[in-house]
Image 1: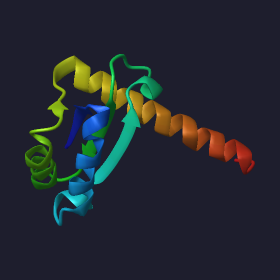
Image 2: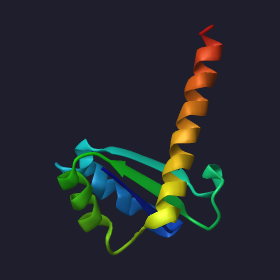
Image 3: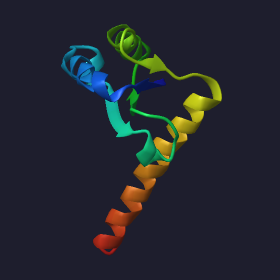
Image 4: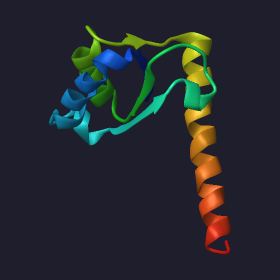
Length: 98
């Protein structure tokens, strides 16, 4: 399961409580500026992937500072995260002769 959140730059330090939480902190958490992903708008996007319980806990921790994306907006953001990861992995393989 995954969830993508949009968080204003001023609220970005709140993501630290997700990292430090016993349950949510064990999930895969990725933070990127929205513009670096080719998506419009201000602030950053936070991708939390993991168990249903872990993502639900991240929801609770971020509910007052971030907006959970839904539908096509969430899918577009998720694809942008994955695309950037694949680009980085293929570039690293090129560096090491893969």
